[in-house]
Image (cartoon, rainbow, N blue to C red; front, top):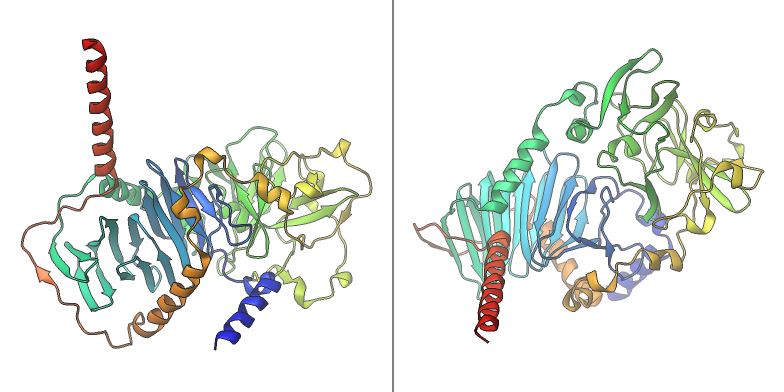
Length: 488
């Protein structure tokens, strides 16, 4: 069995584009506060500053230092958030009906809304916590204890001794000796209230909900306050972002190497749905407008652009409505998987948007995928451009990856960086095997975990409480130090 395992790892290493062709798209990094760090499977073992709208996939990791915060949007309407204080989050599994995370410490908030995914699981060193459709819960790790608090629905918690159900309004505390205790939830703290307020903002109705097709309504809050919907005689209702007059799509961001291909990472707060779904067009006097995909044709793609090549530069053009997207994978109607065709038989036509202001964007070939890459303006690039349609096939070089690393002073602590991959590889298959055997609703539940019930609410120490305590202690030490200086 072991030789087969290593053979499969070798195959996945040699053909990343095929092995990871369908696991991107469901998840993105939708909120960043503070110096959040990310470690991607596609670059090196180095940590780098996290960027908004970065797609997340299996084996990606987040580290959230003190006073930091991060949010992962799963499948549109489900959210997983991590509070600061050195919290971490690893993506173990990313499938259409189940997503699995691992955290070695920190404070996690999970909202698997009604109509969400089948299973959303968070594993800790002491337990596995599974929330099904229409559940909201928190997982907190502190001082050798895992606490599970359920705000809505039902959650199942499992450790080496068994499994138990935790209902709304209850807190389950699991200790490192395997013992467990159930109690009523304590009053909400600042972290819980912040999450509830954010959930309310993300589910509030706004005008964009009228124009987005089924499957994209969950992204309607991204559009609110950043543009307007106007009717266009050719394409119907389109969204026009509120931007500068010389703005153009696919310029405020970069191409990141993820899942064996280049994926557009927009720095704009609304820059997820308009760059991974639909098409763009230009109107004189109105600027660039975005046309959402038709109902039933909502398919995620790395970036709906066509590619242009010159002597030492490479560029891209936003695809107009009706233009075909050529990519390495299957992205629904209006796209072609170039792995299944002879690209030389494709009729080489010019992209319609290439003739409009800033319709073409160029960078030097060696800078594609790097952070802070400078654009090469048309008058400075070499002549002889060629429309190629296909995305670049080769990933960025080592020098570009190294430029994306964070400064030494802001890197995660040694204990996070030195977490050995060998150890994770040994633990993850065990987690996934347990998932297959007990996570599915049709499977019999394991024997109940013996718990001791108490009628007193259990106060769970969470990030904001600890931060306040640390801040107060620091202030007291400074005051005492100042008093000693005055006495001298």
